[in-house]
Each structure stands twice: as structure tokens, then as C-alpha cells.
Length: 343
Picture: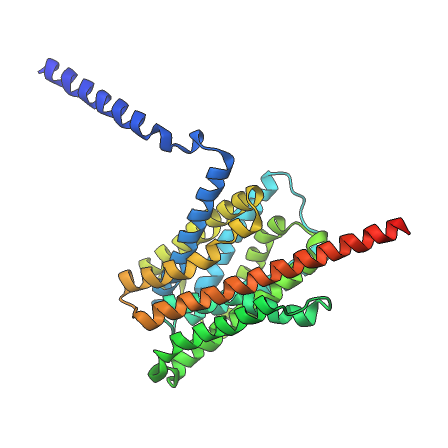
């Protein structure tokens, strides 16, 4: 009896050694910083794509603004504790005021409305609408930054991007005239516009604050505001009545959508060029559309698939055109500085 146990134990150890040896090359410890950063981008690309369906399942059983408020409040508390332990000082009153404005734009309205939109829209379609934020950034930049010019690549991207949205909507013509569906579209569009406005506000004041430091405070403040909004007019249900599926959705959004994914994104952003780190924005909607179709039986056909790819192509061209314009401006500024030094 004992010899049989010893043999079984030895077999388990041998099996463990064999498996651990074969998997050793796949261990993150054995890869370069760049490889780890690329892996982090992959994590962001997939996980943020799944959050749309998680939100969709959560708001089926509770008000959207209440769900968004609990999510942001939980994620914000985690980040504040984390950065406090890292030695960051608490923000001043002026910084808190700035964080509040940023949180209203980027989390209260943008995240709140995008979460609200999936109450009326398929999660995949809502994600495609969310992906057009760079298009609004391009349009708003023309008014915010006087030196911004619309080059051919950016203009072509704007046309193609909106064209892709029209292709997708052409498959929903019967639903567009439905008040709930059109409400979802409007909420999604407002969310992308406010995210773009908040991004430009952040860029304009980037020298005055650390965006990673402000992230937790923005999430926390938006969570407080969303919760107050949700409870004041009776748009919330008692906590005891929130079903387990919604709590699981909130937990997934906090852990995977806010904590792990943001940490992975920051890790990648510090070690990769911005162009490589931001490739997630083209993959998220594709993941969301596929996941929504597979796990939630959302409609997926050639028009929706094709329209999604066309929209993302437009977003890519807009981003490419912006980078070219920024590089050109930098070169011209450098030449002007050089000429000034010669004079």
C-alpha cells in the first residue's frame, strides 16, 4: 500500500517537472521588457473588448448609472489607496477642482452614457460607436488648437470612419426608428464626444499634472457623482435587490476592466511607442462584436463585420494623419528655432 503511494507521488513529481520544464520558456520572467509590454497590449486589447458585454449583462438587471457609479467608486478607491502607499501626496483644492471637471467629462458623462447605451444597443454595436472618439478629437482639435490643420489623410479618415458607421446602421434601419434604439445611439455618440473633449482638456493641461495620478481621483469623484445622480431621482434600486449576475458584472468591470487593464496599459505605455501601445483601440471593437455574437447571440453579418472594419480603418487614418501633422509641426518648429539661434 505504502509503495503504491510512493510510486504515485513520484509519478506526480515527475509529471510536474516535465510540465514546468516545457512551459519554462513561456514564463514572463524569461522574456524581454518589450515582449512583456506587447503581451500587456494584448491583455488590454482583449479585456477592454469584453467589458462591453459585461456592462450589457449587468444593466439588464439594474440601472446603468448605478452600475457605473459602483464600478467607478470601487476602482477609484483602489487606485487612491495604491498611489497613497506609493507616496503620492493628496491633491490640492485646485487639483481637485480640475480632477472633478475631468471626471465629469471622461467618466460621469462618457463612461456613464456608454454604459447606459448598452441598455438599448447590442454590446458590439455600442463598442464600435465608442471607437470613433479619435474622429471627434480630430474635429474638436480644429477649434481648440489654432495650429491644427486638416490634412488629406485625416479628412479621408473622417469620411471613411463615418461611412463605416452608416454601413452598420444600414442593417438596423428598422430599429433606428425605435425610440429606445435611437436613444442608445444618441447616448453612445454623446459619450464619444465628451471623451474626446476630456482627452483634449487633459492634453492641454498635461504639463500641470500626472495623468496616472489623477486617474484614481477621477474614477473616485465620478463614482460619487454617478451614485448621487442615480439615487437622487430614484434611478437606482436597493443594494439588496441587485442580483448576483450584476454583482459579478461589476466585479469583472472593476478587476479586469479598471484595475488589471489600466495597469497593463500603463506598463505598455511606459515601454512602447504610443502607436504600438494604442493598437488596442482597433482590436477592442472587433473583440466586442465577436464576443457579443458568440456569448449573447447578437447579430453579426457581412454588413456589420464590414462596417466595423471600415470604421476602424477610418479611425486608423485619422490617427495616422494626426501623427503626420504633429511630426510636421515639430520639424517646422525645430527649423524655426534653429534659424532664430543663427540670427
